[in-house]
Length: 70
Image (cartoon, rainbow, N blue to C red; front, side):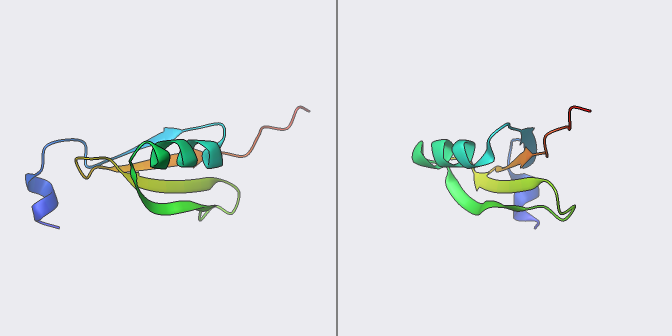
C-alpha cells in the first residue's frame, strides 16, 4: 500500500507474549482495533493475533509453544 509508506511509525511490529488470549482481550478492551483474533500460526504450533493501534500501526502478538522440560 502506497499510503502506508507515507505514515510515520513502525507500520508493524511483533511482541512475544506468554498468554495471547489475555493480551488480546486486554489491548482490545483498552481501545486497540482487533484485526485477527488469536489463531494458530502457519507453523501449526504457535498462536498469533493482530490489532491496530490508534495510529493504524499493525501489532502482532505471538505465543510460542512452551518448551518441554526434558
